[in-house]
Amino acid sequence: LHVFGANTGSGKSLLCINLALSCAYGLVSGDPMHKVGIIDTGELMYEEDFLPRLIACDSGVKIKSIQKAWFTRNPGEEQAVRDSLAKFEEHPIVWYQMPDFDAVSVKAAIKRLVKREGCQIVFFDNIKINPSWQGKDLHNKLGDLAQAMKEAAMECSIPVVAFIQLGADGTVS
Image 1 (cartoon, one colour):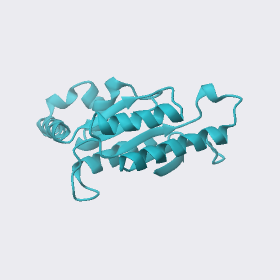
Image 2 (cartoon, helix red, strand yellow):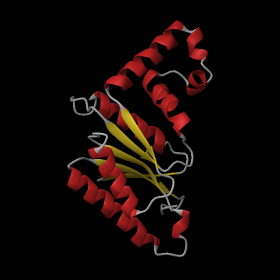
Image 3 (cartoon, one colour):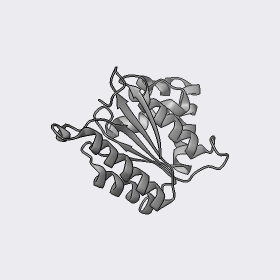
Image 4 (cartoon, helix red, strand yellow):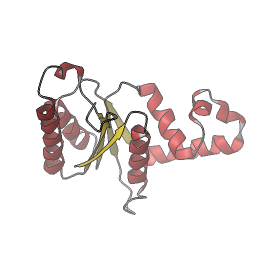
């Protein structure tokens, strides 16, 4: 289990996507992975936003150009988008949205991505305080969540990379 923490708006989701792409294409290990999973807590990114974001990260084409299909007016951008789509077919990234989560559901989701989807690494974007945790011991909830991710990683023999939302004072927000 690898955990990265940063403040709001610092680019955790972008880093997550770039790391996922690098793993899928073998840029990290030299050995491309067949499938990479991303568990998204879903407040800012919805399914219709996911593929354009991946394409933008991979192709270098601005996301607005992809969303509005302006890239079709520029042959270089159009080819870059086509190349990215071809890469995604060969090395799929499985996106799984989980807006409401706890330790049990996260562990089950990781195992599902590995066993059903064949993912070889799972990214969790991003751990933040769940509204249903109000009034409960947050440190224990976060510890349970980290333990569940670690157990799933060990049981499935895969790396799990988690991103955590930090407040300005460095505490989980």
